[in-house]
Length: 423
Image (cartoon, rainbow, N blue to C red; front, side, top):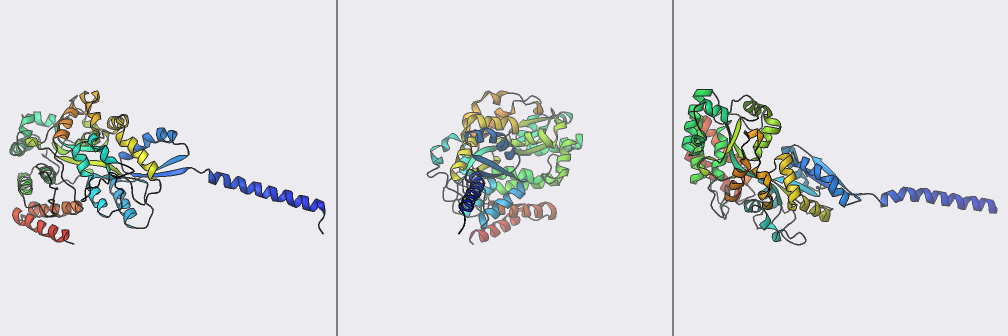
């Protein structure tokens, strides 16, 4: 029979073991919640700057920011939504991907309870809300920044050619004619690639209820006058050797801006920030901004926040998203630091819009971009928009490089899109 001392020692040992186990378990019980956010540049920088203040309001919650390059990010998000892998709690999407991701039904309907975004949608630029709707009319994302279309041009090259801004903007014909004069006087290409002109023309003149490539019944629109005009103009630019056949985001593309080999660039207003911050900062003061030729009002790009249905921390995700999108101070700070044009329209009245931009020769260009935002007619998104973009670009290449008839090219593109839409 064990002695009293042995029993006492055994009991004490049990208490020691229990105490050790409890010390190991307590940290687990008090472990922080983790809110996972996936984004791409420069939205990741905006989120990173906001994290400390947000975590301070949410003690016990850690924000884990996963940043990938633009293409890699969307590939990863596609995989996360289409497989059993765990998706992030907050997902940033570029506008062209919203409809594609919405089609699979993997995103929360932010317009419905408990999010109730429908009650706040009037606070955003109207075209950006339309970009966030699924084919069923559900708001599957919330805009944070937008891309009002703009024309940036090298003022030094324009002056050297004896031209003025109106020669570029009065009409698309005058734009091409100005390119001919400028090429002869300076050797610079009018645009990096004729495709850039096509992209902006098809985005302008979209009729209410229409999408970029499909009508409200899901039928192809690529044989209509928007596309004919876009292809004809791109062909003229190529015939006059006014484009450098340079693909966007390539090293050659950036080098063309740095060396003054490209005289104009049409894109979203965010392109000015990219040129200033990393593409061609040494060209500061040489660029100017204008509305697109023929007052073509078009949107190009934009970022949205979404919540996957399989997300774990949905309540916290929505809280962070509201800070990033519905807080005017946060939206303004993102605009000032990363040139992320705010989707929240109350910010558009801030005095910051009237400040000159040094990179654009002290021009007050934000006023132009604000006007464009008010005039843009949003195109309805379609699940096949990205695929349609690839098909149309392939046919345009056949026109530019192989001399294919424009109407035949568009007819072939339309046939392929109709066939894919019926699947």
